[in-house]
Image (cartoon, rainbow, N blue to C red; front, side, top):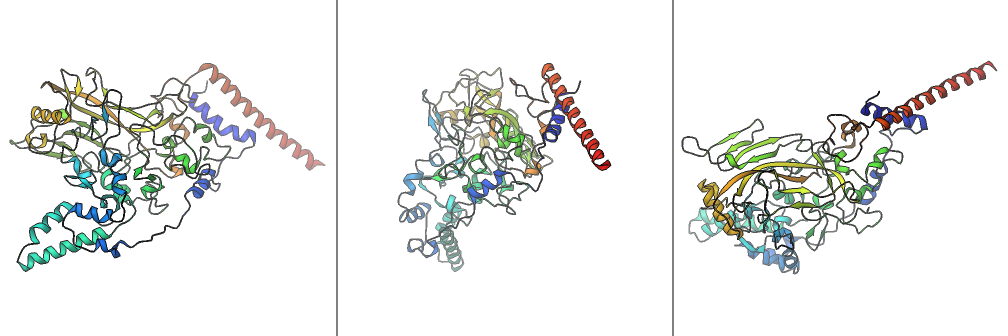
Length: 535
């Protein structure tokens, strides 16, 4: 009896030949590519203002909020719009229990684990205000073309501006010029603007997502066919479209898009799903791949691995933090040159070319907060995808699963959010009791004073680092016994992966029938050609 995987591959090879359907060649173009060209064809971008010529931006600026006021003198509604977005509030929504989701609320993760609530100074480095000034929007975080350390620049200017020393006056003049040039270099958000935070979330390059790191600043198309500078060279905003400063694409509390319409069907649809540009039947009409799109996400086949250039952190064990050598905190590095141990953070593991894990996913992720009870006798899923095979909106989707070990309250049975930075933070004191007490106070959540560590998981959907089509997964990656990528997905029959005696027997009969039919057809052609030659 043929194995399921061999049977599947024989069927894939024989059926097109038996039915007269030609297999797709490299020269033939899938409709999805043509539709994508129509949906994203080059358009002229009209620039109607040169910011370097605006009078409001010609003066010397001595503070960040002063820069904001200059921006708002023209863009009068921008701050009000932005103050309502999650990029500013770090609040997603509040559930019926009063739990507030988002970095600025009760949410917690299993990597940097810190309580946020605008209390932990390290977290403010990515907040689009002016450092600890969280009232005025720093418009240049997203719209500035020139990189500049604003806090240091304004501090140095204040230190040197009033000096009588000619050299220090010259330094002050140079700082003023640098600030003015940066303020005037205004653009639509570019990849480095978005990446400044999103490539380095969680405390470093590639820590969180796995499919977002600094390798995407100027990638080639082998790393990402959409962003490759030798290919389409799309900016992030090409897909992450924006309305009133609300940027499309967030998936952690609700789906990034409510439907899967193509831009060909609706040119006002949000460009955030693969279908937006490629449609729901992107392959050639006779391609079996089109039969998968109602159950398998495009990313599952077209992102075979992530972290292909830079490594990503795959586990973080906080329980091992606090060790010292010769009475002092220390660090060690792994083969990637990444820290695999830090006294202030614990033990890590990094990996490259990581195969995703696959789950049914309808676009929403369920998360627990610092207020939700946990069962410490099990691995705690801090976040997990929602969806099932029966859910019409769900697809088999690739994820990075980050494994952690983090503190929890032994009495209240909740995860704990420590204060990390600052004089009371763990990074300063290496004192868990003190850091956890201060962190829970900032969150406004009780702490019993008794803690231990629990194993946890956290998921990140993989949507970037889309490989060229020639590097997409082969059928045998999933439709095979033993090492199928879909081995952990149960509850349905997958040809090649699963053994089903009756179906395998019927399949063998079909294969043999096709072989017999092809053989008879070939013999008849030989026989009839011979008769023609005799005549």
